[in-house]
Image (cartoon, rainbow, N blue to C red; front, top):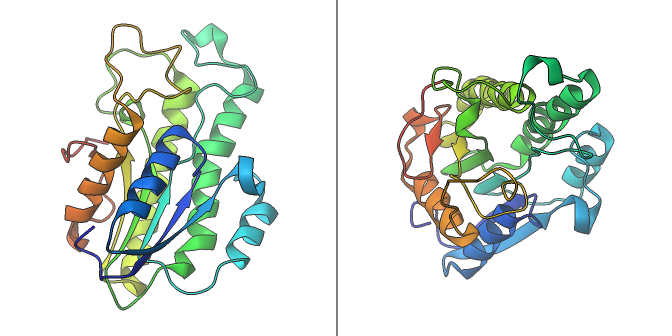
Length: 229
């Protein structure tokens, strides 16, 4: 991350997951990194659907961070996977998708943006998904997951406008990690090659490293290509 100052500090939320742990490990291995703080539900009890839990995690932090990466999200939640048709829509399952993927993102922004450094370059990335693109949707299905990721994208986009007013050197973006070999994709990747988490993590960090402040709030894939909303 040579676009950040030497000794930069990083925070990874969702650091026990496949992509999150790979991102945290890649940052830890960067000679320019001064330290990585890891938060996760498994290791810290962090529940992104509970504002008290998010606020408590934020309160444990001190000092500023140059990089905050949120690697959380869910496709199958409490046994409910993505719908194949309209008749499979279940209100409770849909609300759980929004609670984690959309509300969780909003709460991370609310409680962790104050920890971003203000007078230096700062980066904030959120795992989204290409299927959250409305313009790119040609297959249908997966209504709850698609809609919750589209909501995530809008939340990050809207927040980026506000963050730019107080953090003029910041970049805040949603990112598509590719089809990665994690538990999230193992039942839904038939016919698709799956990228190792380490490769996805390095690619995502590489994209963040190159983005300029004027690109904040846009939607990018792991290969650096912009994705339509």
